[in-house]
Image 1 (cartoon, one colour):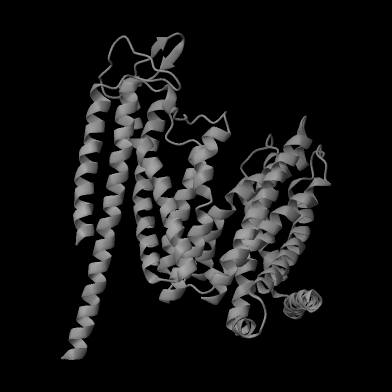
Image 2 (cartoon, each protein chain N blue to C red; image 1 turned 180 degrees about the vertical axis):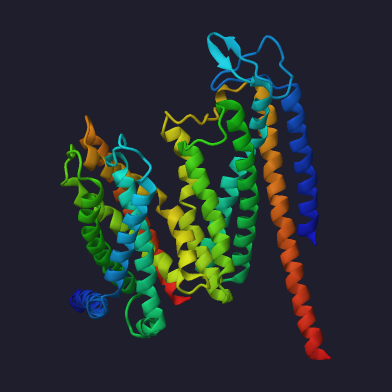
Length: 253
Length: 244
């Protein structure tokens, strides 16, 4: 029951932090460029209207609105990598100990990863349309992330097509151990290939007004992620207890 | 003190080697008798060529198939290898051979490497049969600017990765409800980096170019890294997978 309380508290704090980050992103945050921060002379507040702003020769189509997704997209993406890592960690623990709880933990972490991955994909595609003018581009980061999404979906396909419980757990753990190799590659690919058009987050060069909502959003998102995990875990445990009680009741009467 | 230990270590190694040869020989003898894997895979790759012809039929006369030859070739290899990998494990399971192998006192890694090498041999045979046919059907016009000695290297590197990861995944998928579908879903995303490197290296081998050598070796480096990492991972995980 203590875990449930922790989950609720985390959900509330995480939600508040994320909301605060959003408010800050739309009110206090400056408009930023890839590595340095500039302040636009006027504040374009019209949603998704093409505003080509040339400041030292750099064209910004729709600079103001599309940039706001940064405070959502990046924390969600970061969280997806982290939760994927947690899922793989539990998979390794499962293969080492063969205890069922680790399999459940790994599966639920994987479900959380799926949520985050889908959110990252949606926000990313929206931003790509606004910033690059296309919905999708086969660019290194997008490609590796797409592959990661497919792997996470494959994980659930694999789970669903095995009936034997022990075997399902082992195979799923083995697959997630291999699949997780892609997460650091996808994370580092924008740094390894400098020509990649996907922007790289450079915390050092960010203005304080950008950095604060960014960090707040990361903290909030991680808390929300952990709260989702805790909620699903509690549900799972309650379900198990219910099943055990049912069995006891049926055999008793 | 150390002498007997050494002796047992050596005999253990030669025992593993003999077990490895025995499993491999079993696979090859079975293939020679039934000729099932090679024929199905070859016919399947021929059928893929027919589909390519249909797909490229509207491309027009200005289109040079050499530009996408490598991609087409590896596409055919991926699909035929999935077919073959699935077959090689389905046989083992249907005839109860996998259980017998597990009951016999053989180290699990030996089973993995024997199955992997068996699959590798069949894949290479099919690839060697496919390439001339592909060249004959699609690449008759124009000359090859590239260096053809590169192609066997790419084939070996690519097939090694396919066989290594594929053996692990096929062992998993053969025990699922959706057998070959599950294999495809698991296999294709994991294959992506390898395919990318293989297509890049093969394109260089076909087309040539200014800095083709350098591009080729960087792609080969990626293939080598992939093979080492993935085969090590598959080797480590096989023991868990085959025992479950």
